Length: 122
Image 1: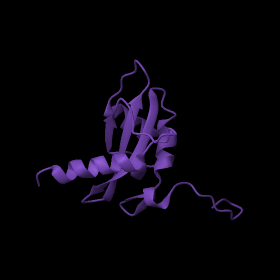
Image 2: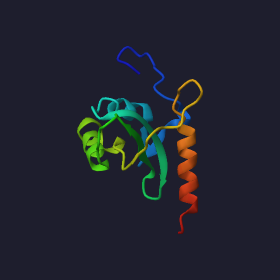
Image 3: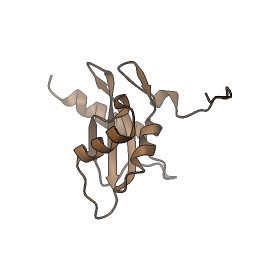
């Protein structure tokens, strides 16, 4: 809601991540990541976390001939957003799954991660 009382849709409710009681919208984090000079594409998903409820995971595709570490991306986020929004996990990929019209498929990434976590020994 802005200062005049108008409401704006910022993201899909089903994509919202709840970290330690805070509502985190993936799009807000992605917008910050897209400002990083080494990042070509990014997608944020919420992952189950036993302490926080959910934690933020970033999937990142770097620009050609660029290199970065997870610590570098997390540090960049720490400087540019609220602490509760900062990704705790960063995975670098060559490409992100996309629809036939080029939209990044967050649902596919989330499903892949859930499958991985369900296959891990407890």
